[in-house]
Amino acid sequence: MDNLGKHLIEDEPRRHVCDVAGLGVSVTRGWWAQPLGMVLGGQLLGRLFGNPDHHLRSGLGYAAAIAAAGAVHQVGHIASARVVAAPMDTLLVTPIRTYTLYDDTGKEITHDQDVGRAIGGPVASISIGIAALFLSLLVDNRYLRFFGVFSTVIGFGALAPFGGNDGEELFLDKQD
Image (cartoon, rainbow, N blue to C red; front, side, top):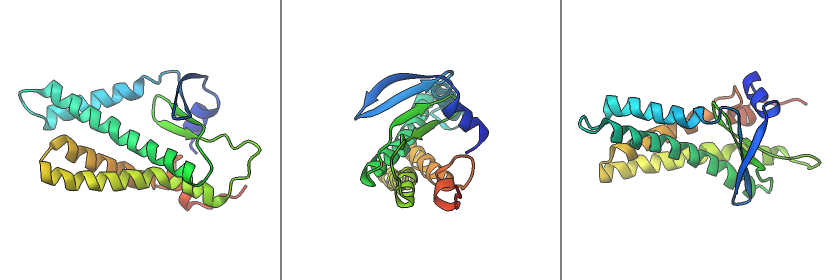
């Protein structure tokens, strides 16, 4: 994990916001920068690729697609963690990204369980992204097509073995 990620997870004060399906959702200071970045990024995409008569509405559509792609990735982690019987404890929203946290204190977690938890996000992102791309061919919807591309890119990007990505857990041999 990179130093910034380590700092956000270990040192930043957290505030518990709610529980969703038995999972705690917490935020750190500046959490609002992440959704704001999604909205601003969506607005930029709306200006560049959206309907010329409705830039604002197009931007909100792109922002919703960005948020949905991130949510799909997190749901993949939640589901796979439960399947391998090592469930997630907290979804932590920080200014730069959302982290999946596991309270494994005193529990024996096998390498296979670690891998099972890590692979869920990329698998969900890639599979839902590809499905959305095929569906967008049928319904010809630019936001669905963008969601498909963005979700697929998130999935493959998460497989990169550095910077706290899922690929770090999947592909790097960690020596304790």
